[in-house]
Length: 171
Length: 231
Image 1 (tube, rainbow over the protein chains, first blue to last red):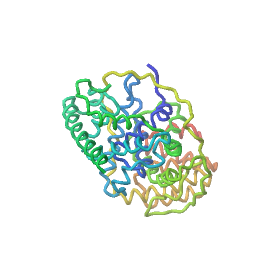
Image 2 (image 1 turned 135 degrees about the vertical axis):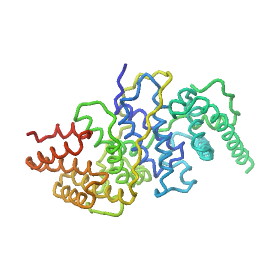
Image 3 (image 1 turned 135 degrees about the horizontal axis):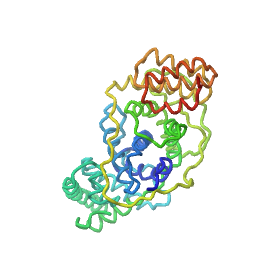
Image 4 (image 1 turned 45 degrees about the vertical axis):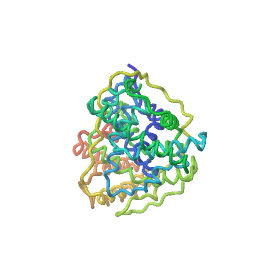
């Protein structure tokens, strides 16, 4: 079984963790602290990771819990939702078109309307392409719960995004 | 892969999601600064020659506590300016008891990491087990922890600059105010490093023994065994 060094995992998957945190509603100002927290936890638990298993759902579990705990800190400075959701210039892909960045912002906005449990399931399934069993393992929830959250979450996302698209077309 | 039993999404929604799926590059400054913040932990493991191991919740709180505020502001500033590899302004060492020392970044000029080759893990999908829980957070008042963080960050910054007198001063300040504080283990580790750095072997030996007794399961133990002094 190939060993996974923390350093290689960090450098390889750092962008994924950043993106996952953004999708989970973490604003640019909180990214440095949350990235640090996630990888610190990853470092401490790395010996429990099986390299033959997909790494991203495993990492997402850390990101989800870190983001969830961060939301619970009432004393932390929070950005306005608009600031948190708008794609920060330095976080935008410089090679992406304006339309692409707008689409990303719309998706982040729509994700922000979902409760965090359904949001996590939707992200893993419809953005990361994870299987339902991997999602269940990542989030530590029963498989049936994955499916139920996914069904509801997808319905909510479709409704919100279609409304945004129609609203954008109408304006 | 996603579950094939789930129905397809409407095309216009699918088109939006398709734009979001690619993982964009991250600012190199954020990538490098986070790696640097992890340094104290990862270097400890490297010194010991051991693979990362699960450690006590106290250490997690310690390191998160010490570092979470200290560099955050600096990195945000870097994000805003998309600055990479620029020499940082010399941080001022000031004990700020009531607020995080965000003006005292310990960032060194960094090299871009974007082009750094990484080894890929052989990862093939198979049913995975539950991810571990993130360490529990402390129930201590945030203000107290913030004060501890501020002092420890002063000590850490001084240590990075080789100013051992300032390190020991900050350590003494922390010990006076938070003898059994949440960051006491980090404080004692920093003190030991400073004593070794200034060549005070007798006191370092004493503090090393004390550290072993107080923190018998500390992840810092392999590191302090490495950097001596040895009896």
